[in-house]
Amino acid sequence: MAIIQQNLVPATGDHLITLDTETNLEWLSLDATANLSYLEVLGGAGGYTSTYGFRYATGQEIGLLHQHAGITKYGLSQVVPFPQSNHVAMETLIELMGGIALNSSTSSGSVLVQTQGMMKFRGPGVPTPIMPMSVVQLWLFKNNPGSSYADSNPVGNAGKRAPEIASYLVRDRIMPVGSVSRGKSAKGAKTRGAKKKA
Image 1 (cartoon, rainbow, N blue to C red):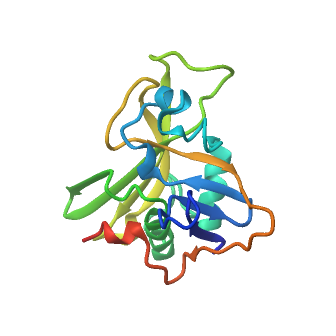
Image 2 (image 1 turned 45 degrees about the vertical axis):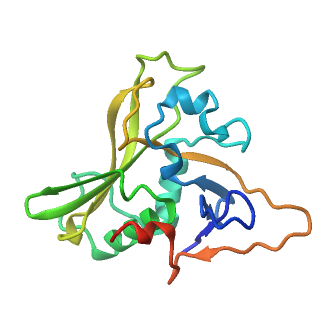
Image 3 (image 1 turned 30 degrees about the horizontal axis):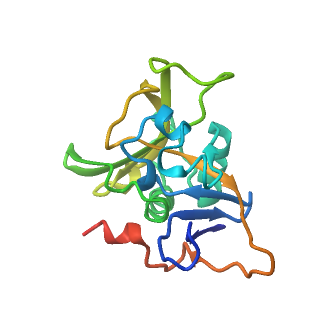
């Protein structure tokens, strides 16, 4: 896996960055933007787009992140059952990027953990507050791993905020001159997301 966890603010242990070493893109934790609307994030809420240089990720960039993390199945139209490895890859990415607490419910005897993040607005300019938006979702069925899948769906408008909705924000990798890259690997790492499972 080419995905490792790092700090947004160096030496703080905040673990707010997930680095995809194959694309050299840094992804902001989904927890950071939960309950902020698309327009609020775009306008600088939290300083992520203004101070830290993040932007909304495109659907293609999110798809590559999923692919590099090992997520291979999208949508209910895929052949069922989905492979166990897809579930494990999704669980690992959720642990690294947060979002595991965004929405939890019980459905058909399975514990469902849903994480969802808005992606770049389709079209030029800034959307109006009532413009429809889409989210990319990871549906993780803890008691039925073979049913886990990823997809995208409408989520409401650009002015909507909800605790279960975050944003996929990304930036090019930032490496200070003369620094050595260090981070937690996806394999065997104790992550802040893992603490949320308790």
